[in-house]
Length: 112
Image (cartoon, rainbow, N blue to C red; front, side):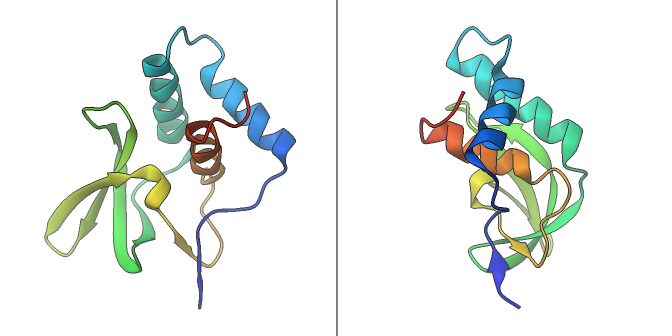
């Protein structure tokens, strides 16, 4: 079965999610925090995912020192932190995965 990077949403839906995550944010740091809140609220962890083709368990989400949203992932006995946009799914994406697509679009300067 082939991995899916993320679901395909309309541009309008992506813009709606970006607006929801960043509605009361005054700067970029707060916008990253807005996406972190949405991921925490809408993507139930732990959840299985792929990172560079390797199976991992996503334990949750944090921010790294530059401020971007990262996924805390476990593979075997080790825990790693990877940019949330690096997550891929085997089969259908889990509920809430659309927030990762919206975050990736926002990082690229799209929407909102």
